[in-house]
Image (cartoon, rainbow, N blue to C red; front, side, top):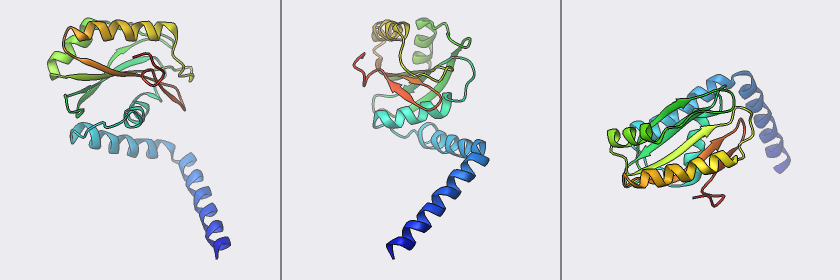
Length: 167
């Protein structure tokens, strides 16, 4: 009996991989819609880093140029807004703390998760990424806003600067 169950599972798994490869955009769109509905429109809580990383990956992994975004949250970690704030070139984007502070005040955020993509596909943080994270953390403290994480999205992988000890 286990042989039949294993065989059925392998057939289903193969078909899902085949369907995914053929209809990748539709799967991504459905997943994006689900995540948007779950967190932004229903003001769901981001209760752990894995959820935040998944959400940011859905938003940024397909971008062809560097995009810097923020996930704005209230004091209970409920999502208020996700916004792509800065766009750059294939390997950099200029980020201005003043603009982020204006957005924080606009949505009345108490916490924030910073996120950007690396179009090269490699999500490892650069020295510039680490320095920017520290500068933004210090600047946003003046607005009583806590920087919870800075997530870097590659094409397949995602890195959390908080989990690497940079925050």
